[in-house]
Image (cartoon, rainbow, N blue to C red):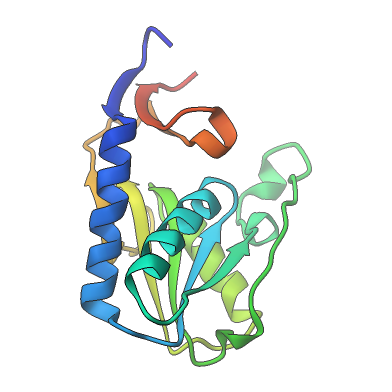
Length: 179
């Protein structure tokens, strides 16, 4: 980890999630159809945290779902391995819902494209917005986040690693050279 640089601490992550929740409330208010859908894996963890914040502040509970996009990826057959499939759990109420897709890092846009395709297999939401903790640029597709925790200028030879306590025993965002 000596080559890694911390770009967000645990305290900064918590503060950023609080701010993002405030932005969601400002735009969506007391929306009974608001649904957070986390992209497996760390997007799910971030979405759960956001749901807890929103539920504490709003009088109506926020719907929650989790989405595995591996079979929708346009590159999985080129990876030389079979994709690891995680669980998908989308509430029945996605039809006409205001969905906020939650992911940890926005990079090329391909994960978001796959997630949009996967969501549409469950119905037609009224709106889908994108919330990301980190936007690192370098888009290959015309996809932009509606809610951004932090924009980080990166080089193509770098990667951003989001660590969450639920999986990694700590909260932190690191910038490091690709292996």
